[in-house]
Image (cartoon, rainbow, N blue to C red; front, side, top):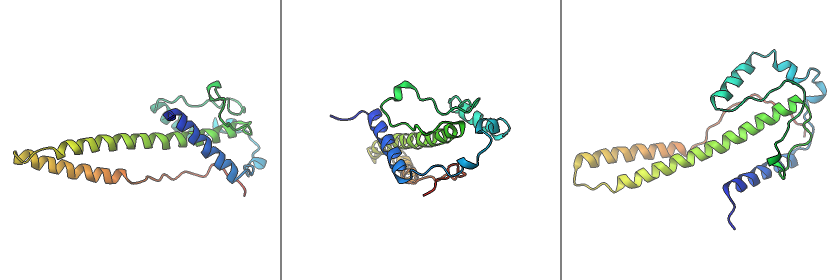
Length: 170
């Protein structure tokens, strides 16, 4: 039986997390040296407001870091292999970064597939334009050239650089 898209995504996420866990079960190396809880530091970092604005612009409610508790997982995630070792606000913040990156990667792939489908459909329509009207055929050829260039660009990967936020030993 074919899997639903949600089930495929869930299994993909589980495999990624299991692979990451198997790769390095070592504890995060900075933890023994962190004296001030993350939530207390966050209130004095002026960059947090920029993160809140960016999340709100995307329609995402920014996480609250009012105390030092770890992540609180919704009941609909039961059955997934959820991290149990995250017990404080820095662990919750690190998990938030990882989840946002996973979500952004997945959404970018969906957007890419959507655009490729639409562009390929348009290409097929333009290829059907007959030679009877030279101006229309010329415009169709120009559009097909542009669409092929756009499709070439959509074949590429984008790389973002981020500050290291998690230091694991190995």
